[in-house]
Image (cartoon, rainbow, N blue to C red):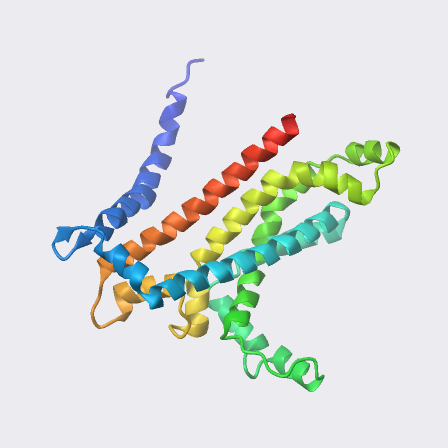
Length: 277
């Protein structure tokens, strides 16, 4: 029986959505970023480069994103290793819980952390009475790293778990028969196989953190200088709106994410090259 439609035609709806909601907005941002007072130029980018305020926003966004992504990746890696060695209802419950918590973000997450770790939060007061901490501010750099790491962990687990499932028990047994211990197995077999997945997951976690807005805005409003906060203020929060400058800052954010993606692709290609040798 002949097909009613060619296979490529089924991609048309996806292509239309992708163009309308991805390429078109990105193209408008790229054009708007170079539009300076009725002319074309690099004035907005020079303003960003010369402004200590904007450089601070870029630096803080990168710092919090990198730290929270690395912490989230480490915790997710350990969790995935534990899940692969667990079976039965506990494993199914943990995977279901991870799926649920991966969608728990934004304003509800900020409100939950305020109740738990705010100035008068339950956990904050309990730790202070136990003498484990003197003071902790959820609305500071360390507080943001904690809350960013929290929503990075479930996403990291969901991305890494299939890669850990792909590690065969026969490889571990063969390495053990050849005299390799646990450390040698992970150094020469496990981690090299997982390296592309780890690099790809780290890239997605960094992009996820760099683009986070609702959680941090609900938590600190505009009192902490981050790129997403600055972009939002330039288009909706100030008395004098500067959408073109916001587009330039958004294009800088896109450039940073593209650079991280290129580094990840280089790591993956390097991993494949080493594996082939």
